[in-house]
Length: 161
Image (cartoon, rainbow, N blue to C red; front, side, top):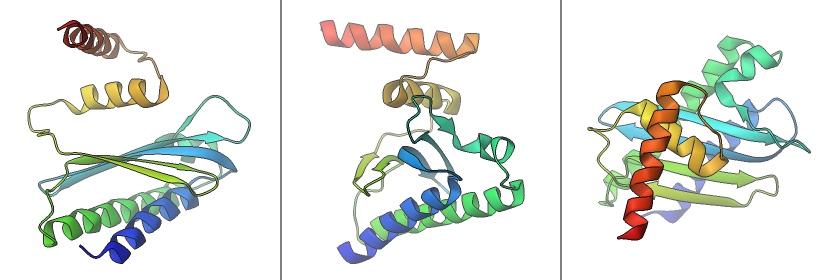
Protein backbone atom coordinates (compact mmCIF):
# COMPACT_ATOMS: atom_id res chain seq x y z
CA UNK A 1 0.00 0.00 0.00
CA UNK A 2 1.21 3.48 -0.75
CA UNK A 3 1.90 4.79 2.75
CA UNK A 4 2.50 8.29 1.46
CA UNK A 5 -1.00 8.43 -0.07
CA UNK A 6 -2.59 7.00 3.08
CA UNK A 7 -0.74 9.49 5.26
CA UNK A 8 -1.99 12.29 3.01
CA UNK A 9 -5.58 11.05 3.39
CA UNK A 10 -5.20 10.84 7.19
CA UNK A 11 -3.80 14.36 7.17
CA UNK A 12 -6.61 15.61 4.92
CA UNK A 13 -9.25 14.12 7.23
CA UNK A 14 -7.64 15.71 10.29
CA UNK A 15 -7.33 19.05 8.48
CA UNK A 16 -11.01 19.07 7.50
CA UNK A 17 -12.02 18.41 11.11
CA UNK A 18 -9.64 21.11 12.38
CA UNK A 19 -11.04 23.56 9.82
CA UNK A 20 -14.57 22.78 10.99
CA UNK A 21 -13.78 23.56 14.63
CA UNK A 22 -14.41 27.31 15.10
CA UNK A 23 -12.23 27.82 18.18
CA UNK A 24 -8.95 26.74 19.75
CA UNK A 25 -9.08 23.07 20.71
CA UNK A 26 -7.02 20.55 22.65
CA UNK A 27 -8.16 17.23 21.18
CA UNK A 28 -10.78 15.79 18.87
CA UNK A 29 -12.33 12.33 18.53
CA UNK A 30 -13.67 11.46 15.09
CA UNK A 31 -15.87 8.48 14.25
CA UNK A 32 -16.07 7.55 10.59
CA UNK A 33 -18.07 4.76 8.99
CA UNK A 34 -18.15 3.65 5.35
CA UNK A 35 -20.20 0.57 4.45
CA UNK A 36 -21.67 -0.40 1.08
CA UNK A 37 -22.01 3.08 -0.36
CA UNK A 38 -23.22 4.65 2.88
CA UNK A 39 -21.07 6.74 5.13
CA UNK A 40 -21.43 8.77 8.26
CA UNK A 41 -19.19 10.76 10.49
CA UNK A 42 -19.27 12.75 13.67
CA UNK A 43 -16.74 14.15 16.04
CA UNK A 44 -16.41 15.69 19.44
CA UNK A 45 -13.72 18.14 20.37
CA UNK A 46 -12.48 19.59 23.61
CA UNK A 47 -12.08 23.37 23.53
CA UNK A 48 -8.96 24.77 25.18
CA UNK A 49 -9.17 24.66 28.98
CA UNK A 50 -12.64 23.08 29.03
CA UNK A 51 -13.72 19.66 30.26
CA UNK A 52 -16.96 19.33 28.27
CA UNK A 53 -16.71 18.15 24.66
CA UNK A 54 -18.60 19.88 21.85
CA UNK A 55 -20.54 17.69 19.40
CA UNK A 56 -19.73 18.45 15.77
CA UNK A 57 -23.31 18.70 14.55
CA UNK A 58 -23.99 21.41 17.18
CA UNK A 59 -21.34 23.76 15.76
CA UNK A 60 -23.68 25.76 13.46
CA UNK A 61 -26.08 26.57 16.30
CA UNK A 62 -23.35 27.32 18.87
CA UNK A 63 -21.11 29.46 16.65
CA UNK A 64 -21.40 31.84 13.73
CA UNK A 65 -20.69 29.13 11.14
CA UNK A 66 -23.51 28.78 8.64
CA UNK A 67 -25.13 25.40 8.17
CA UNK A 68 -24.20 25.61 4.50
CA UNK A 69 -20.48 25.98 5.34
CA UNK A 70 -20.65 23.27 8.00
CA UNK A 71 -22.27 20.77 5.64
CA UNK A 72 -19.85 21.66 2.84
CA UNK A 73 -16.98 20.69 5.17
CA UNK A 74 -18.85 17.63 6.45
CA UNK A 75 -19.50 16.37 2.91
CA UNK A 76 -15.84 16.96 2.08
CA UNK A 77 -14.97 14.86 5.14
CA UNK A 78 -17.29 12.05 4.00
CA UNK A 79 -15.78 12.13 0.49
CA UNK A 80 -12.26 11.89 1.92
CA UNK A 81 -13.27 8.99 4.15
CA UNK A 82 -14.59 7.19 1.07
CA UNK A 83 -11.26 7.82 -0.67
CA UNK A 84 -9.50 6.26 2.32
CA UNK A 85 -11.71 3.17 2.12
CA UNK A 86 -11.10 2.91 -1.66
CA UNK A 87 -7.34 3.12 -1.06
CA UNK A 88 -7.54 0.16 1.34
CA UNK A 89 -9.63 -1.90 -1.10
CA UNK A 90 -7.47 -1.01 -4.12
CA UNK A 91 -4.41 -2.23 -2.26
CA UNK A 92 -6.09 -5.51 -1.28
CA UNK A 93 -6.18 -4.63 2.40
CA UNK A 94 -8.97 -5.95 4.57
CA UNK A 95 -11.76 -3.38 4.23
CA UNK A 96 -12.62 -1.70 7.51
CA UNK A 97 -16.17 -0.72 8.37
CA UNK A 98 -15.44 2.14 10.75
CA UNK A 99 -12.60 3.95 12.41
CA UNK A 100 -11.80 6.29 15.24
CA UNK A 101 -9.24 9.04 14.78
CA UNK A 102 -7.95 10.90 17.81
CA UNK A 103 -5.84 14.01 17.24
CA UNK A 104 -4.38 16.36 19.82
CA UNK A 105 -3.37 19.99 19.34
CA UNK A 106 0.27 19.02 18.68
CA UNK A 107 -0.84 16.93 15.70
CA UNK A 108 -0.28 13.57 17.38
CA UNK A 109 -2.72 11.17 15.73
CA UNK A 110 -4.06 7.76 16.66
CA UNK A 111 -6.11 5.65 14.23
CA UNK A 112 -8.13 2.61 15.25
CA UNK A 113 -9.86 0.61 12.52
CA UNK A 114 -12.73 -1.81 13.12
CA UNK A 115 -13.64 -4.64 10.77
CA UNK A 116 -16.86 -5.84 12.38
CA UNK A 117 -19.97 -6.48 10.33
CA UNK A 118 -22.31 -3.57 11.05
CA UNK A 119 -25.29 -4.86 9.07
CA UNK A 120 -27.04 -6.24 12.16
CA UNK A 121 -26.24 -3.40 14.53
CA UNK A 122 -28.22 -0.28 15.27
CA UNK A 123 -26.57 3.10 14.56
CA UNK A 124 -28.01 4.54 17.80
CA UNK A 125 -26.49 1.64 19.72
CA UNK A 126 -23.06 2.14 18.09
CA UNK A 127 -23.16 5.88 18.78
CA UNK A 128 -24.18 5.39 22.43
CA UNK A 129 -21.42 2.87 23.11
CA UNK A 130 -18.74 4.88 21.23
CA UNK A 131 -19.67 8.06 23.12
CA UNK A 132 -19.46 6.22 26.45
CA UNK A 133 -16.28 4.26 25.73
CA UNK A 134 -14.25 7.13 24.30
CA UNK A 135 -15.65 10.20 25.99
CA UNK A 136 -17.48 8.95 29.07
CA UNK A 137 -20.70 10.55 27.80
CA UNK A 138 -23.74 9.10 29.50
CA UNK A 139 -26.87 8.82 27.33
CA UNK A 140 -29.73 11.18 28.12
CA UNK A 141 -32.56 9.16 26.56
CA UNK A 142 -34.18 6.14 28.17
CA UNK A 143 -33.37 4.02 25.11
CA UNK A 144 -29.74 5.12 25.26
CA UNK A 145 -29.50 4.28 28.96
CA UNK A 146 -31.01 0.84 28.28
CA UNK A 147 -28.52 0.24 25.47
CA UNK A 148 -25.62 1.22 27.69
CA UNK A 149 -26.86 -0.86 30.62
CA UNK A 150 -27.20 -3.94 28.40
CA UNK A 151 -23.76 -3.32 26.89
CA UNK A 152 -22.12 -2.98 30.32
CA UNK A 153 -23.86 -6.12 31.60
CA UNK A 154 -22.66 -8.11 28.57
CA UNK A 155 -19.17 -6.71 28.97
CA UNK A 156 -19.14 -7.70 32.64
CA UNK A 157 -20.27 -11.25 31.77
CA UNK A 158 -17.48 -11.53 29.19
CA UNK A 159 -14.98 -10.31 31.77
CA UNK A 160 -16.11 -12.95 34.26
CA UNK A 161 -15.95 -15.82 31.75
